[in-house]
Length: 319
Image (spheres, helix red, strand yellow):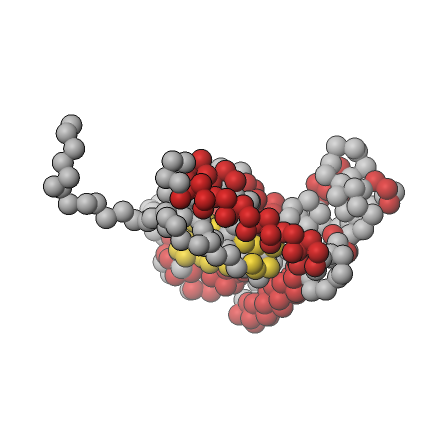
């Protein structure tokens, strides 16, 4: 087809910022994380169908639990989450989250959960000159390494910008020089069974990175805020069972000594790549341990939500 420059120019959704200077703000990698439950059924919506869905096997008609009180319906929701009702009902409860302030290293773990549906910030036709960078607290607590870290990030971003500005090197090619630590966001949607499987996998403090832990904690908090009767269904301090079962086999990921939650087996101190717990690896100068701060905050909110739920539901805490 012929070129027709009389046609109106299409307004593109983004640009590449040709010849603009780079700008980078550096943030603690855990301070930057925000996780939000954007969409999921309300308790009222679950009350409207979960009791009937889970008892359809014995029913004479589709809707047979309308006479139940809200309290009785909430108990049935609790029973579902505790393995006492038809588990396929989990597949009807879909949840959509936004996860912000993470880097592409975290994303490699997120997308392994293939049952989720994803939408993400792009790098192929969007300028990354002004993207922020996230930094683990152990590096922030190591002044010399932190300065080198910042310099390398800015050098790579400057080379990226210089290549794009030639207009002879595609942004698709230039982006290969960018580091993993640049901040991004993802949308993730899955049914609640798969969401809880993600949480149970990623709360493992012995094998999973702190970013994974914190995103999982925040997702769990969001669910408990939405459905308070499920507060005891996941314990974020549960021992790391896979780590424990493989620590003495030579086939496991033995990074650190067990922390207090997983210290329930005999081991040789030299069985591990680091002769310390994870929380002890806090930089060359020491200082703020963001993860310990964040988990304390999560613990406090979960305990508050548990107290409120126990005041509301007398079936909690029972087998």
